[in-house]
Image 1: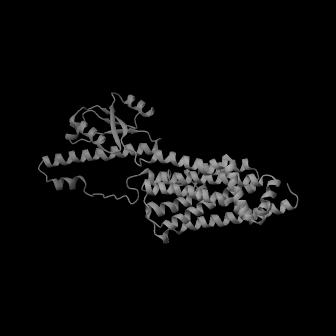
Image 2: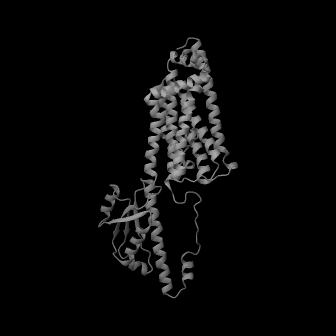
Image 3: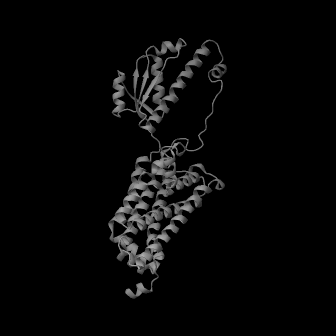
Length: 395
C-alpha cells in the first residue's frame, strides 16, 4: 500500500485522502451533503407554492349598505385577499393585526353609499402592517385593485344614468389611460426570484465555511502542514487536490437545486444555459478560495470558520433581492460587491428570468473571473510564504 501511494501523483493522493476524510469526519459530510440538501428541501417546501394568495383581512363596515357590501365582495374576490371576518370596532381590528391573526383591516365609513351617489368623495381606509413588508404590500395590492374598480363602475353608472354614452363616460373617468406591462416575473412568483436567490446565498455560506474548516484542519499546526506538503509533493498541487472533492460536491448541490427549480418548479431559462453553468463554476470556485484563504491567513480552523460565517451569513441582505442595491449606502453597496454571490445572482437573473443578451451579460461573469484569478493568486502567494516559514523552522 505504501509503495502504491509513493507511485501515485501527489495531487491524486491528496484528492483520495480528502474523500476518505469525508467518510470519517461527520461534520464535513454534514456541511457538504446533508445540510445543503436539507436546506434545499426545506426552502422548496416553504416557497414551492410560488404565490401568496388569499391573505386574511378583516372588515369594519360602518355603513351596512348595498354599496359597502359590493366593495367587500370585490376585495374578497381578488386573489391576494380574503375577507375572513367582520369586526365591530377599530381597536379590535388593530389588535388582530398586531396579533397577526389578520393581515389588514378594511374600514368603510358611515354614509358611504349616500355620499357616493351625492357626488361627494368619501374615504375608504385600509390598515396594514408595513413591518411585514411583503405581506403588507400584497394585501394593499388587493385592496388597491378592487376599490378603484368599484368606484369607477359607480361613476360610469352615474354618468350613463344621466344619458351619457358608455364610451364617453369611460373616457371622462380615465382621460389618459395607462397601460402597464410587467416585463419579468409578472405574477410575483416567489420561486422565480426569492427561492432562486436564497439557494445560492445559502450555498455561499456553506462553501466558504466548509473550506475554511477543511483547509484549516491541515494548516493549523506545523506537523499537519508538513504532512499535507509531503503527500501532495508540493503545497500548490496538494491544495488543489484537497479542494477538488469539495468543488465536485458543491457543484453537484448547485446542479440538484437548479434541476428542481427548472424541471419541477418551472423557473424560466430564457438565456444561455452554458453561460449559467460557467457562472456557477466560477461562483463555487470563488467561494472555495475565500474560505481557503481565510484558513491560510488565520491558521486556526475555529477562527477561520467564525470569520467565514460572519462574512457570509448576512450576505443575502446585500444582494439586492429584499432591498434594492441602488438604495443602499456606500458601505452596504460595497459589501455586496465584495461577495461573489452578488455577482453570481446578477448573472443568474440575467440568464433565467430576463433572458439578457450575451453582449449585456459580460460584467458579472468577468467580475467572477476576476474573483477567481485574484483569490487563487493570493492563496498561492500565501502558500509559498507559509512554505518558506515552515522550512525556516517557524511555528
